Image (cartoon, rainbow, N blue to C red; front, side, top):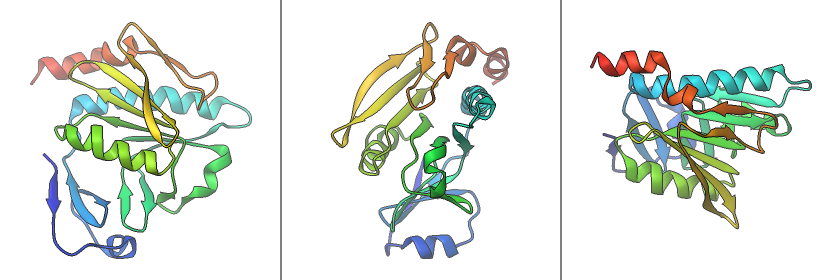
Length: 194
């Protein structure tokens, strides 16, 4: 469950000056403690990250960067930490030090226990920041929803399952059979040893 610290609103500068234990986001000036990722989420995201990263770095010129767990500064009061980010080569100037200042091209979130935050709040924040695509990976239903920005709002372009192939115009040539994600043998070993 996500923990919220209510009280005085923080600015981005105040947030960046803090030292944290755990993973915290700043959303509209309030701190949110993120639950540690579970192994199933890491397994699912790891396959997507590895295949996307391998594709992006193998192109000439390189298409951009694929980043895991980097802070994305959306405003002076909001810094979110998506599970996975794609930042095109044309937008790499947004990456400074440890954060992306502005909306990357694509964010991926694995659904957490705080579904309201993933499906409603983050959706609104990412749309307001102009992020072209938002993917929501559902480890319970083994689906991946692709939301595409249209007129400042997300529309659901597709909900993919293990029988589908994932691709995006954000990363030309990238394709991933989702059976590799959802039927990964390492994931199954984690699930059977709970």
